[in-house]
Image 1 (cartoon, rainbow, N blue to C red):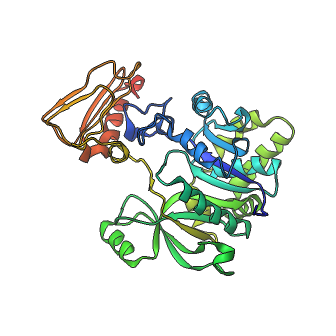
Image 2: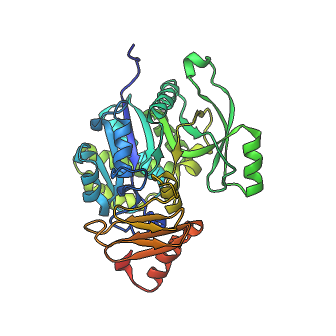
Length: 371
């Protein structure tokens, strides 16, 4: 039976630099435009659009990215109409991104439901993801700004958490798995993370939000009035056919603040749906190794790479053409080796987060052509 609810639109946030994936990730080819998870050559952004398609067709997908990534983004998701790729002239964090996209959707459909999603995550169980999203959209249609929280599997210090309250009024049939949000918790210490995990009432905050356009517009007006005023000026210009100039002039002046700090932590009546669908934020080369197809020795190898007496390594050959060099490992364990046309990274997997230090060093040396 088809559900009677407003049309659903998706806003996919596709900015960011992804410095932890250097040398594959560069200024003009950031993380979301790379095939970093699993065996597929599908980029993370393309995967995000594809797995949404049973719920949100491409003609109702809005992708928000940086001006400098417009061409690469359009190439990665050719099924999304070019007019629906919104290009920020300057990075201003997630609240301006979401507010601008919401206003864009509201002009087209003032009754729309919106799903806001990051572009650079991996999902193992896509059917379960869509089931959870369906519950989140039901809760949003009932007037609750809703998030999806990831059921934690370890005491993680790198994520924020969401404290979960009681089920929504109306019962499971009305709200699905949705529960009230008690509060958002900042990234915790190791001791606090272990406490949150043991308590069983906290979920990881994965930055996914669901709402009616009017509800989000009202929250931004209440909690971020300067942002609301700026977006209103852009919206007014768009209605008169002069949006491009207005965006260039106004968007860089908007307050740079996350939707979490600017709106969600201040709003009442929020809901959360727990999700357990093999989520991974693909945060480093360590994640790429975890999600890759490992051989009997635990290696994730590029085509043509050779491993002799070597275990638990990751080898990625990303030059043009790929694997034009033979990468051979002998007697080494737990390494990340990434080769591109102009760079080679070798680092212990245990220090995968430290790749950003290479980017910092290149910036300090003025070698911007390498980043």
